[in-house]
Image 1 (cartoon, helix red, strand yellow):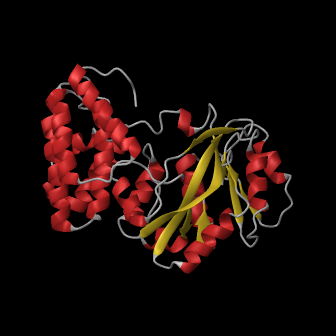
Image 2: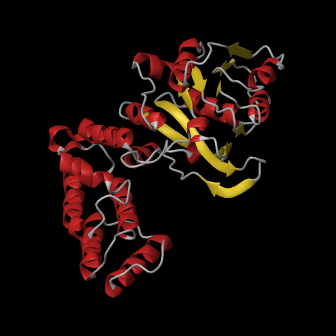
Length: 336
């Protein structure tokens, strides 16, 4: 756990770890130069499992790397100073990694709470199995950082570390999943706190140059020189839907979908059915946010659906119907 000026929430975060059903662990906490009562709260605990580090103000990235360097156990669990862990979190994740030696890391579901611990009725999008995670990582982060348990050997053997970019954990999970398997347990093991000072309310997770670069690099890792700068730009429009969302951009988007499917058929990096499903879901979200509409939008959607052959849930059919209505009326009149 790294902590900086976390006096309001850190006691509950620490308590949730000390009260775990799996009790054999080392709890390393770095105080990153806090100027409030964070340090005194940490020092008030007399539990021998807590190891407090006080390097001074070294910054977020350096603190994360120092934690990895100092960890001596075979497994590293990440915890944020303002969140709350379920009492069985460490036990369930440890058991999973112990029983599944071919997996590098495991996360979990996470619900949102406010500053007073009230449930907000929302949770992070959930992707469970390894094949689905790898496909979705082409577009979005599939892991809640504070829910992760990872093998220490994976970090040390591959010299993996946090990069100084927006979404540094996203980059780390991408690089790990390029070489190893990952999983998310279908259990809510984290209450993730939403407040004005945490990263969910900053510019951290907005698409910026850092995330654009890491997703472009991911495509090139899998498909090499076949990926052009134009391909990457179109692909990023399926991540940040405000990019390239005019009628004139649709033909290039359609061609990119065909190209990534053809490249995957050649290189076999992703499960074909899962990749097709993920692509269709991204396309629907994209088409619901276009600036203009005409019937060509829906015709393009029909061609893509024929090629991708997705499984259509009630929610996806609802989105298709909305796109048809927008295409006929030439305007968007509801948001989905």
